[in-house]
Amino acid sequence: MAKIGTLKTDLKKAKEGVWVDYAAGIRLKIASISSKAYRDAVEMILKPHMNRIRHNLMPAEERLDLLKPAIAQHILIGWDNLEDDNGQKIPYSAAKALEFFKDPTLEDFFSFVVSTAGESEAYRSVEIEEAKENLSCS
Image (cartoon, one colour):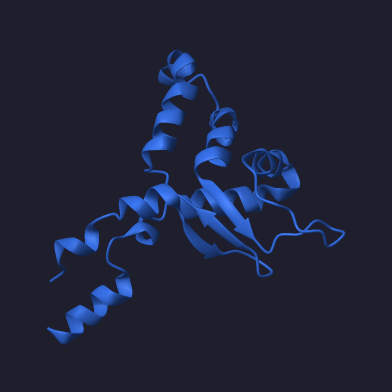
């Protein structure tokens, strides 16, 4: 049996993000899509478009494009070990993240951020490995 604690979300991790490894040594700090700041931003962005959304008149790609600024501001919180093609360190900013999200050649980068933000396991109060160890000790 699993304890209820293994299902709980660490609200601090969800809001402030967790560091995850990406490609080529790049690390990204990604908050959860369940964070209140992101949900509030999404509500504000989509509110003027709700009639089109309800009537299925807005393609998913258009909706995702509308949400990119909120994802850049509230989901991708930071990065480390990211350089431009000349080897210059790229400091994190939401504006630079949005620039990357809008670049079609960086679509995989954007997809990784979104999919990671949706992985609830990354934001658990009790780490999965810790929960497994506790089960094996029982």
